[in-house]
Picture 1: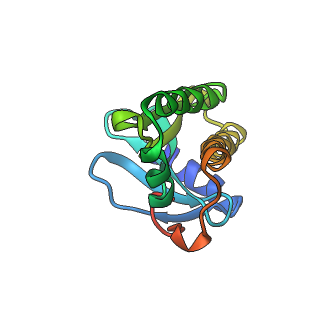
Picture 2 (picture 1 turned 30 degrees about the vertical axis):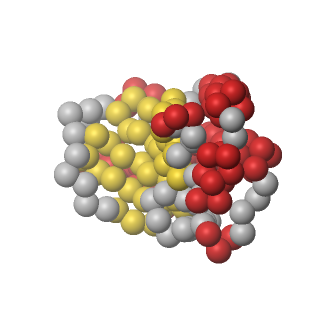
Picture 3 (picture 1 turned 120 degrees about the horizontal axis):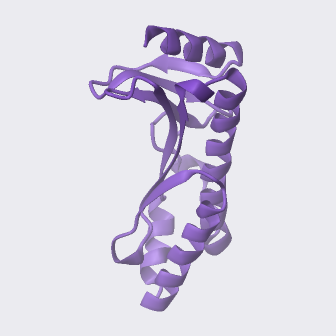
Length: 160
């Protein structure tokens, strides 16, 4: 277990992505990384999954976009949720979306790597895939509802 943690931390540090280790009672280790610089991604080994590493990123929808989504009629809301699902599904990542009453509030994209496939190449490729999936979601929102001023983002939080 420590071997995987040490390898993963070293590889992330070698590439300049490692930011910090955070306490997490549900994991053997939990790293916060930046890729690219201002985007936060989590690298975790869940307790009970000593042969697996999860790379994931959670994103909250901005209040400005939420407000615009709530103004849509029910058919438009449902159509947007389906478009969003299809956009993420084509990226070979796992995802969960929170969309009560078809208003997208947040989404999480993740990928798993098992020990027998854990290499530096696979780890870094997975980090980049997770970022691209996050970006795909952001672009889909921006395409439909426009961009939001930078001041409303939270670059230091787990959710950006």
